[in-house]
Length: 124
Image (tube, rainbow, N blue to C red; front, side, top):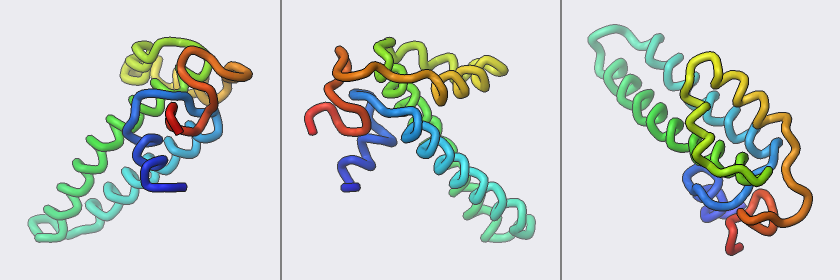
């Protein structure tokens, strides 16, 4: 996988992404968040390490929010829905159901208005 594909997967809003790619990318983001939080909780209070891990956690958190939205939009595109429905990923309790639906609901067979293929930038 190239740097361009990784950048598109986690930060781009156009194109389509499959159920498996959506799930695995979301899992990877959750692991990064959990690791940064774990390291922060292990660092002694008032130490330089604590400040570094806290800053890293917040940076990973905000990048993850952007990535979750980008992944959700592309997943919705895979079955022909507009990306605006990705806001459901931020509604408490509904977000869990939305994530499960996005992981399980099959995408369109063949091309749709959002792209020719899944798991590739629209022009690549």
